Image (cartoon, rainbow, N blue to C red; front, top):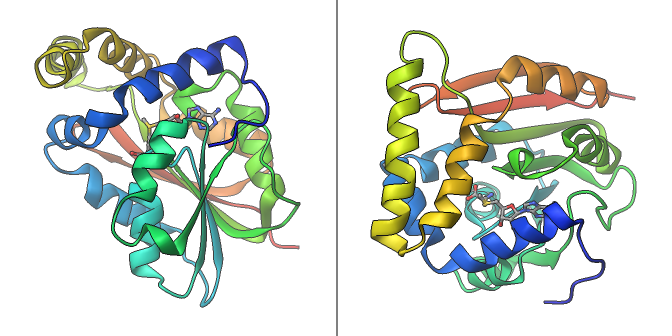
Length: 236
Ligand SMILES: C[S@@+](CC[C@H](N)C(=O)[O-])C[C@H]1O[C@@H](n2cnc3c(N)ncnc32)[C@H](O)[C@@H]1O
């Protein structure tokens, strides 16, 4: 997979982490979300509200679960899926149905697409891995057509009465599962930290608005540890 530009030092670290965990990424996700991840990806695909024959860009596609859910829901859509982990892209491209998606190397900070190219943009678990979420969202705003939607799946720092038990569960279970399932405690320690340290939905909504989006809404999932956020680029 060609790599155009070298990511930033933090980007390189993230890229190496995901290259390393590719082989067991889907299995770990299924276990950590008790099988819910695939359903959330279908919900993201539905939330894109693609018009007939529309075009969608899935960023940080990883093993392609969201991109393939979009393809299943909208067989007539043009689906582009990008990531900066070559190994993740190779894994995605091997899955059933992958031949009708265009898989491409790209850094979410500098998307290789023209202005107003897509009817919708989706991403799962991208924002907590980037240094400047506003820059990345502005880039998505640029490639979206006026009136286009962005649909985001992210981890969510738990709040409310369940905060401390859920936090404790995340702190203990994720590195332990990483060790047991993948023999890789280090990568999943990073995942635990980026989950608990990520912005709550109100803050993501504020960044989305600063990046030019409107009509921001969100739903929390799985004891408040995950969320789906939708927003729209204002119509022309
Ligand atoms: C946790 S995985 C998510 C994969 C998929 N979206 C899902 O929901 O299962 C995060 C992905 O984001 C990619 N990623 C992180 N930062 C990125 C960036 N700046 N540009 C492109 N991809 C990035 C990683 O390589 C990894 O494949």
